[in-house]
Image (tube, rainbow, N blue to C red):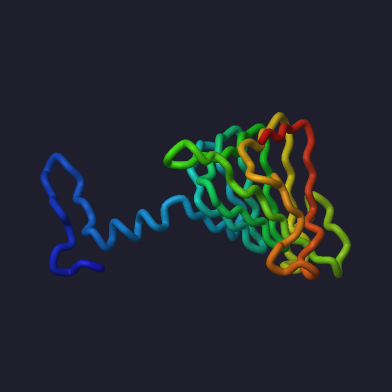
Length: 171
């Protein structure tokens, strides 16, 4: 407990207990951050500040609206897959003036051939896979909606696999 001398601000019978300020700040700091390490299905709307799909992880977004804070990082790492099916990915800010987010990075591997779109996710060195389909929309992206490289490691992680079918991209 981060506040042993005062773990609760109040605890009235008609209100749930509130965390101390230190705990509340930590909760707010981590709000909207997701790390996907296994098959995961999102079917409800969410607000995201950071999304990392790690090797072996697969995120399927189906019939949902995902809102990204301006500056949100979305990474499909090597050995991972993200499927956006009949969903909307869009930007939003607290001030409602900067609705842009930097889009999705799909990390590849220039030393291996591209995986099949439905390949098993057992090789952590295989290119990341992004599939956008069935009327999905990507909106409010700053410059580039999808990058198939890691701009921090230019030569090594180029070539992520991207498939977009029956989808819409708007600035």
